[in-house]
Amino acid sequence: MKIRTAENLADAIDADLIWRKKELATLKFAIGRSRTRPRLLNATLRAGVALLYAHWEGFLKASSEFYLEFVSRQGITNLQLADNFLALSARKSMHDMASSSRVSQSIELVDFFRRRMDEPADVPYKDTVKTRSNLNSDVLRDLSISVGVDYSLFATKSTLIDEKLLHKRNNVAHGQFLDMDAKDFEETFSEVTAMLETWRNELENACATKRYLANNVCP
Image 1 (cartoon, rainbow, N blue to C red):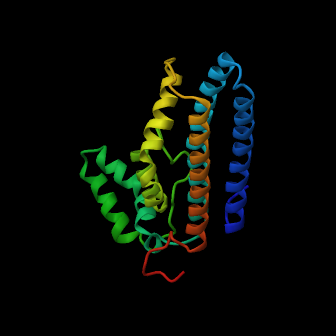
Image 2 (tube, rainbow, N blue to C red):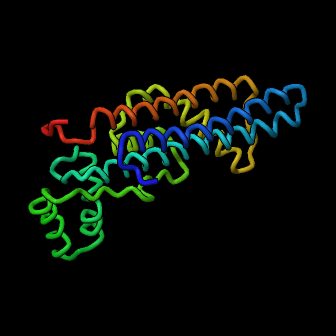
């Protein structure tokens, strides 16, 4: 389905979040059932941390690309784009200039800003979000800026994201000991699922308020 309308966007984001939450709820139930069996509990906790991180990264990547596709299909010009989306639209020209010593590549970037501002924006969305399997708080901040999400909503969660989630997931991925019990997991589970909801709400609010437009463009 092509994401052209706010309804298309909400449907795509909600569908992606629903199946993830169902899978996570199933795993949480399994962890609860294994509390009296230490070996099984340890195995399910390790699986739980890996899956919780996978859905954290997977949802933010997928939903952000849905939103980028929505913006890309609005038929607005580069001049009408908010700064963060204009930077994405100009990224190819900037990348070509940075990777070449030829003056012609620099001129192409100048041409973009002088002559192509009234052209329809080409905001890339396919495979645009790069988390490098390392969605820490710094990567999250950059992603938030890219899509226009208010990072302050997540700023107080840096320890949770970097230590309780990513660091422990890396320990599991590298076959190391996992220092976590069922209570720790449930607390992390609750906070991460709440952050997923917050991210979903932010994208839908950004869409509804047309946060993707430049300040001087009437919504």
